[in-house]
Length: 338
Ligand code: FAD
Ligand code: EPU
Image (cartoon, rainbow, N blue to C red; front, side, top):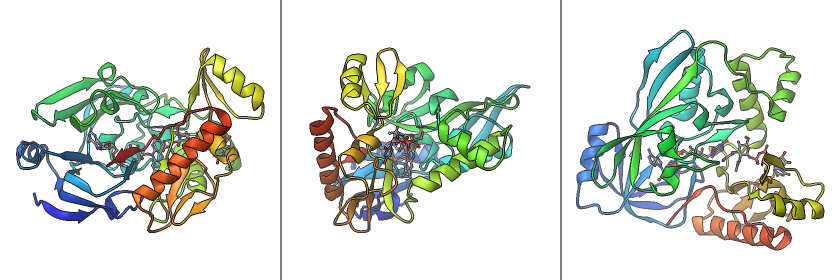
């Protein structure tokens, strides 16, 4: 376990922000995690996964603990389902491919999401009609202050849209070390109702898709509109899609009858923030090296040397414009690190 000083995080965050960590350590085992957390000389700590859901605003005056603990284990298998336990440092997409190679179903709609498996419960990742919570059974996490290992059930995690216990009361208190999923081994539940998936399958002439076909379709759709962080720095959707009550939705839709929306329940309507931002004229706009993606207005990008502060300034301006034009508050999905 080597502790590095004044370490550049440029290649540890998908925005490609060149900020420094005062101290940085890569962790490959649960034992090493315990011993590093016990060290009293580093009072401030930040847990880091793949760096694909954060914006680093300034140099980090803390010990950055990069979780790279590997391992995937089949815990049990019946005729219908399999339980797998995945260590936190496994790359999410590679883990999804591992499940597909074995014809285990459930994670295929979430193919190609960047980051580590241990971070997936933090914001209950989701894509194309499926969320982590749909296959999640439990996770284990080490308490930062006491190093006690605690098991969290699905109820304990309190999952919501891009929300969990770990983003609220449990924020910065735990390092997730493993996640257990229940997946199908036969009679897979095929979720292809998300519009773009149907279109993609139709294009390829696939009528009775397998879980691999769904994964391939999702990969193709994502590649067509989301920038590859290796080519253009970004953190996926910068903002969450806002949820309106029925009353607010009716006021909004009367003024904006052409706006797309999703009815979540009788009193919850989700509006695509990408549409709101595009209507404010920001899609494809560039301010120095900070910009709004040309194909997806919800994605802020770093054209090379933008600082975290410049991206944040752009985000603040977008939030103000959306509020002014639509009287809707949009809030960041990415974690702002100061
Ligand atoms: P990091 O960015 O490293 O960390 C995120 C937060 O979690 C930080 O606050 C960090 O301190 C904390 N954290 C990290 N690891 C742990 C741990 N082991 N225990 C406790 N806390 C921890 N997200 C979606 O939901 N759906 C999408 O479709 C999607 N598409 C994306 C597309 C692109 C191109 C990009 C760049 C991002 C996308 N994201 C998406 C966002 C992101 O990939 C996910 O949120 C992912 O789970 C973040 O994982 P990470 O390991 O990179 O987290
Ligand atoms: N839209 C526009 N202009 C744009 C972008 C979007 O008008 O520039 C409108 C269109 O009407 C489009 C709708 O918004 O049909 C929805 O767009 P899209 O399907 O691209 O999805 P999104 O709402 O922008 C969400 C997630 C993504 C996830 C996709 C697919 C959030 C914050 N984002 O994006 O997650 O991959 O759905 O399920 O919920 C992430 O969290 O980082 C992320 C990429």
